[in-house]
Every structure is written in C-alpha cells, then in structure tokens.
Amino acid sequence: MEKTVSGLVALLHEEADIFETLLEILKKENQALIHINVETLHRLAKKKETLALKGRMCEETRQHLLEKLKQELQMSAIPSINYSEIIDRIPEHLRPALSQARNRLLKVAEEIVLVNCQNGTLIRDSLRLIESCLSLVREATGTATYERKGVLHEASTAKKPTTFSAKI
Image (cartoon, rainbow, N blue to C red; front, top):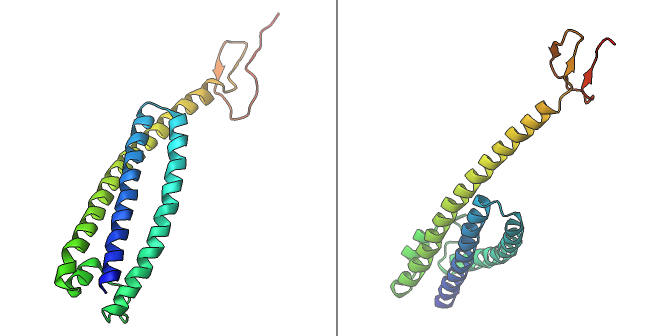
C-alpha cells in the first residue's frame, strides 16, 4: 500500500506542476487578451493543448492508482471515494504527504478557475464590442435610398447599392 500511496502522491505533485504551468499560461493569455495580441493567443492555445494531453494521461494514471488503492484498502465495493476518506484509512505516516499533495493541487486549481473566469469575461466583453461594431458597419452599409423629395427610406436587409433619384 505504501508504494501505491507514494505513487499517488508523486502523481498529484506532477498534476499540480502541470496546473501551475497552465496557470502561468492563463495569466499570459489574460495579458494577451487585454493587449489584443492574437499571435500570442494562438501560441498559448497550442501550449494549453499540449498540457491538456499531459493532464489526461495523468488523470488516467490517477484513476488506475485510486482503483488499486481502493482494493488495497478493501473499499472496492464503494463506487466513488474522496481523498478525505482515503486519508482517514491509510496508515498515519502516509497521511501528511497525501494531504499536502491534495491541498497543493486544490489550491492551484482554485487559482486556475479564478483566472479562467477573468479571461472568459474579457472574451465575452470583446465579443460584445465586436458585435456592436459589426452592427454599426451593417447599418452604415445598408441600402438607404432617397426619393425625389429628399426623404430617406430606411435601409432594407437586402444588399443593394445606395441609389439616388432626381429629375433632370
């Protein structure tokens, strides 16, 4: 059991390292969003994809280790367990390392959620601004027509050039 718990602790630290790297990328992404640096955003998106792959591999390994640990703790019948339950059932000398690894992972995950929400807000605000600008452009390029009397008709939704009519 000690080997499984040690493997789980090492894996949680590896996941925390991945999350810390992701957090740094998200902070850089935040600055790129503020400064509208599209090239940097593309580069950071590629880095996030790479980290996501590493994270998925760690997740699969973690699930395998948790299943193994459940068997060793004779908890296989329980469909899902949390780390608190595991910590309560493992030998006393293994608890601090597992608790520390779990807390480190939770802390960085909370920071990621916060920065990711900030980035989401920036993106939504940018999209609203773009939609407003596009709306203005669409209105400005509508098909306004003037009658002989000089009265402006409202723009139609069809794409026709602006026409003027006058008696000669």
